[in-house]
Every structure is written in structure tokens, then in C-alpha cells.
Length: 335
Ligand code: ACO
Image 1 (spheres, rainbow, N blue to C red):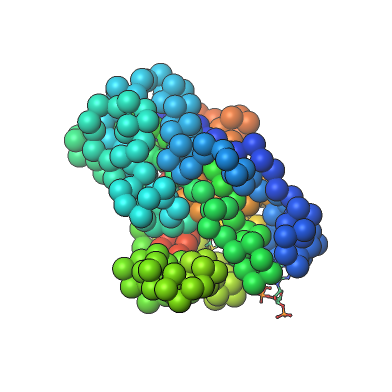
Image 2: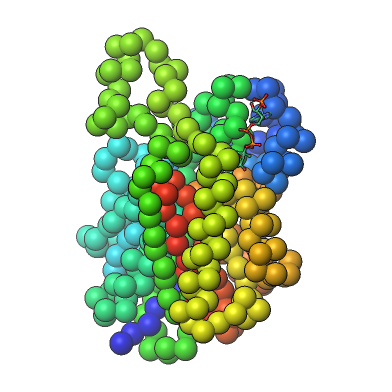
């Protein structure tokens, strides 16, 4: 059986920096509240008139990852694209990426697992490679949140959290079974679907209905989050799925060289760090600079950590995510 290994990483974030002070000009909020509750200092939001969208940013990140893998777009056998903010209601961003990167008519799959999207995507790609079906799979996480947030005081508990950006990884076949993805672990619990959701547009909450009601600022368009409930579930599920990954591979928390949690909220990451008694060098966070970029957060952080030289050959790297659905998952890999 083959194994799969990340051979190229890349990320792209829009240039436009939005600080907490900038937000306080749009809504009743302040730097102290945001930093204390979430750890976020600033985020990137796509500027009006920019060409960037989830698909475009994904393509920019993908180009970097493919080049760093020493490949060309023609070498990619399959695309997995994770996003909760696709350019269209349908089709998905994966097919747009295929066209933008002028790839062969390879298959493209969009993943709708929100903050866990990249972990799910990596797991899907891993299976394709382990079965021998594909040699190089491109996994992208990309989000354009700023276009869909309620930037008034009504939406402040959500809108201050989210940022825009994209990351990409090339997962390639390797015959070295001591390296690469050791295991992936995926879970969901749909009964909590409406605790963190955007209701419209959807088949159940269709646009004309809302427009007929002549209320274009209908709350159904914007993300709803039961913050306290999400927080409580996140810390439990993060812990469980990290433990599951460690136990599966007979590892301890002390074996982790780098843990990259989904950048949901710095307080969640710090809770997990404390629970597993990880030191600061074992955990990578960048939510301070980019906010929560949901499906893109782990891959942006992984790419940035790699660029900064924080991942060395043979390091044990653990990724974990929790998000809307609820969905959660982890990936354990040997670099
Ligand atoms: N600025 C100022 N005040 C605010 C803001 C804001 N941006 N947002 C909410 N408030 C106010 C509320 O109106 C409320 O005021 P009130 O007491 O007068 O009614 C007060 O602050 C407390 O509001 P809560 O919503 O209870 O705020 P909480 O302390 O729970 O913090 C937060 C909100 C940060 C979202 C918190 O619930 C949390 O950390 N949840 C975890 C969920 C999370 O991190 N989600 C990230 C996305 S999901 C994911 O990636 C898994």
C-alpha cells in the first residue's frame, strides 16, 4: 500500500488589513473586547472591486503549492476544494480552479464541512492516494467571508471573528510508510446544525421569499452563532479527536512537535494547549493576524509555520478542527 505525504504548501491572503479599530468605526465594538474574547488583532478582508473570490484566492495559493512540490498543474490528478463561501450556490469552486489553472479534465470535489473542511479534504485525498487511484491530489481551503457578514452592531459577535484567505497543499504518493499521513479521524453531529449556520440562500430559505418580504437585511442571510454553546462543544470535541489520533498511533502529547488547531478563537487553542500540557513551541497560532478563516485556517497556518522553518524533517505534526455541523476531525502526520 502507498502512503501520502504533503510535498507542497502555499497560502494567499488579501492585502487589505482590517484592524479592530477599523471595525469599531462600522459597529459598536472595540479592540479590547475583541482581543480579550478571541485573541484577534486584525484580519484580511477583500477590498471592494478586487478580483479575489474564494476560487481566485484558492487558485493563487494552489499555484504556489504546486510549484513548491516541484510539479506543474498538469501533474495534478484530482482537486479537493473546501469552502463554506463558494463563488456560486452551484457549481462548486473546485471546477473553477480546474479552469483557472488550466488543468487537465481531472475530477474536482467540493467539501462542505466548514471549519473542518480542510481536515476532511486532506482525509479524502489521503484515501485516494493510499488506494493507488491518484498520485498527486491538490487540497485547497479558501474563504471569502467579508462579503457575507452583517457588519452592523447586530452581527458583531460573529463579524469581528471572520477573515478572508486561502491555503493549498499538494498531497503526493510516497512509498516510505514511516512518513506522511499516519491517520485521519472524522466526526459529525448534525443535531447542532442550527447553532452555527447561514440559513439563506438555501432551498428551505430561498432568496425570492426574502426579497418579496422586501427585507434585504434579513438575518437569514448572515451567519448565526450560539457562541457559548459552540465554545463548550469545541473544547470537548477538539480534545477527544486529538486523543483519538494520538492513541491510534501509540503516541503521547509529548511526542507532538507541532500542533496546529483550526484558528477558531485563541481562547479555544489556549484551552487545548493547557489541557494537553503543550509548550508554546509545540503550538502554532496566527488567528491574531488573520482572524478565523474557517476551511482555510489550518492550511494557512501550516503553510506559514513551514515557511518560518517551524517544521523539520521527521517532525510529528497534528492538525485538529471543529466547526459548524457540528463537524470535527484530526490528522496525524510525520513530516
Ligand atoms: N464587541 C463588543 N461587544 C460585543 C461584541 C463585540 N464584537 N459581540 C458581542 N458583544 C456583547 C454582547 O452584545 C453581549 O452584551 P450584553 O451582555 O450587554 O448582552 C456581551 O458582549 C456578551 O456577548 P456574548 O455573545 O455572550 O459574548 P461571549 O462572551 O460569549 O463572547 C464569543 C462571544 C467570542 C463569540 C464567544 O462566545 C466565543 O468565544 N465562542 C466560541 C465560538 C467561536 O470561537 N467561534 C468561532 C467560529 S466557529 C468555529 O470556528 C468553530
